Length: 307
Image (cartoon, rainbow, N blue to C red):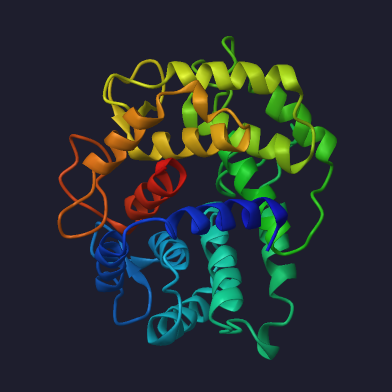
């Protein structure tokens, strides 16, 4: 596993070990209940897909429950999924899922018949590279995305492939920086957001090019995104906090040794408040349903924030 994801994964797993057993069991049972007959995990539309499967596998790994029949069925789902070309989100879900299953369950998802799978993934990622040094979310898009560039960098690290032209990627990421210290996702957006800021800091950490001034201003931006609810909002136009922005912001602050820039107890209260009684987490105060994606964000917040 790449160093960045390994550090994040082990940090979250260590934090999850401190959670009460009842909490761990509640969310484990919920996630397991979302596994479909094909081995994948269900999203909100009722079908299994790589995106939700990736979050389910990450959550089960954090909980120490990625083994046995659940892991075996998920491995078969990933094997079948490999034959199709995917967008960058699904490619990360696939490569990360393969890595976690190999690491925790010894599943050896991709064996002799797919020995060159890393080359196939690298080729698909290369098709997303654009002239400005960044990466697009899909082959059909001409626009580089801060978030997509971060996902590509993670994928390449997972498959032990070098990042092509890191200096050009650095220039693209820095061009996405906005007044106030945050980063935008695409050039057409003028307002910085928590998630693209987290992605940009992630890229800069991956390529070892994060300057202290950029880090300090990003910390200041993220601290201003905490609302009275305790969580972080996606950007300055959105008045309410959400669990995704809260997790990505908190993880970034932890990575920058700056968690004290926000109210930790308030953020923990916000995350706890989105736990569903039946397991899983909701995305925000207005959300009515729990799913495996937000289960990961919620567990991640608890792992990073619980004393």
